[in-house]
Length: 444
View 1 (tube, rainbow, N blue to C red):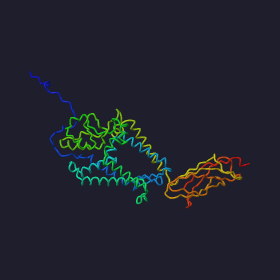
View 2 (view 1 turned 90 degrees about the horizontal axis):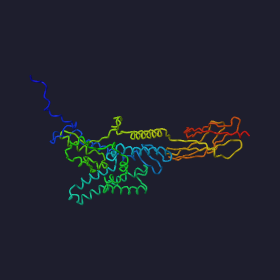
View 3 (view 1 turned 45 degrees about the vertical axis):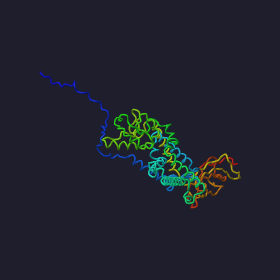
């Protein structure tokens, strides 16, 4: 009788699955994918937007330093370095946290997408290629050299002028003072030397942000990499190497030049353009390494993959929230009244006098004038001064003497008093409270 049991002895073993990606054919099968040059287009759009903002910022009061009045103009708000010192300090602290956090979490993403140095370097390289050409004969042509040098000079002057406007008031733009002309000359010379000789070499050898990156980044920092599990799909076309303007070989398994990568994504586009025509897709990726086991995956996807990064983000958000509260609490006129019990006024019979320190901040661009009025205690009045004036965008500290006549209605002890700053239109700009101490000696 014949057995019906299937014979499996000759069946070949099933090959293990090497990759979830489809095999890449060496023969073109279709055109480029919809993701063709995705990083190039998005990055160019971001760079154009950043360049436009940098040029327009001082003119629309997005960011400007008014050196004449000692004022930082930020998003239309005028922050005096004396009157709003704590707000300015908090903004500087927020900027430092953002720079440190960006270096730790996003690596050189700033360099490749936002940094003006990268944009200038790429533009100068492109201009040199277009004007002077690639062949040695064209590059030595005197007319091409003159056109290229003249264009670089004009661009350097434009960048120098744009930089100087950050430190000028609107009235000074049409008639800059002598220091502005000196700054324009120095800045133009620096930019000219940068575009002629440095360019991307500055990013590699002199950039302070690059030094910070080497100190703080770790394997979880955002990187462009070729996954080892997909290396077998690489066809060694070297398109990724040709696309990189920093001469980084992303296929190098030892990652010897990883710190030079600006995370521009051009190598990803190059790989996508080649493999999409062969039935595949890019095997080079822009990714964060996931956190430890049990760490929330959604946090890891945005680069917050450990407690160090989470703590840095929390502190940054806390500082930003504090700045928001400080700005919301700002008023055009701010004042404080502090009793100076260690300082005595001249004694006069029949009255008690106390000395106070009035600190008034004027955040407007016009002089502020006030009349001081006192209340809250029978017979109290402002002995000196009756009127005060504070210059625009400044802070004044004024010695104020309050006097109370002796009477049976004024009991010894501490009393709450009110001092009002009354404007020329009889409106109360500020009302302050303080303590007025009446000693028992006045009864004698």
